[in-house]
Length: 115
Length: 110
Image 1 (cartoon, rainbow over the protein chains, first blue to last red):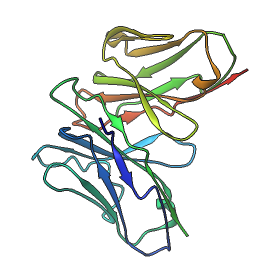
Image 2 (image 1 turned 135 degrees about the vertical axis):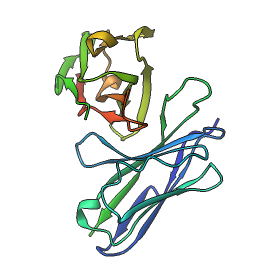
Image 3 (image 1 turned 120 degrees about the vertical axis):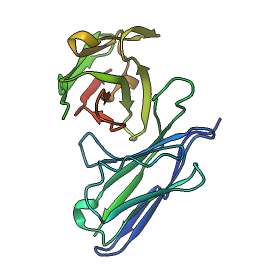
């Protein structure tokens, strides 16, 4: 079946602009994660959604970052007033907590460049 | 918070060689996964292994949860094994926050 998809694959924006990144999880997966990977670094957890529960936002680096998940499926990560340090690859993962719990499957990522 | 340390940070192998990658974590975990990030950036699941031993072809992994480490074994390495190998844990008391190690960068020479 289809995997996790993300759009756009690349985004170049000017400092100070807002951006929206989209994630389509694997159909039926109830859990969704967002991560950030800076150049040559490991992954940094941003936010976690599970069903209708309140999201775990503990990894969001500032109040310029927010995320929504509509209808328990598609998620959007929004970065307001982008800064150059926001440049990174933003990765989305989903998991089916009903089968093999917490095994996460990743999308291809969105490469964000803030100029 | 929990610390996840991977070693070695970099590894160069001749094709056909075997290797062992290590992941140490500083606190109890609910879950542990190994991933391979290929040169194009895609993260690929290798193992979900909070405890015990699993094998998949030339790869195998062992997690000793009581001693807080996991090992990933690569046998008969191939050039396509090149990339970065990440260990990721979900702390027992950390909600759903998944913590990744810094990775082991592997290059397999033909």
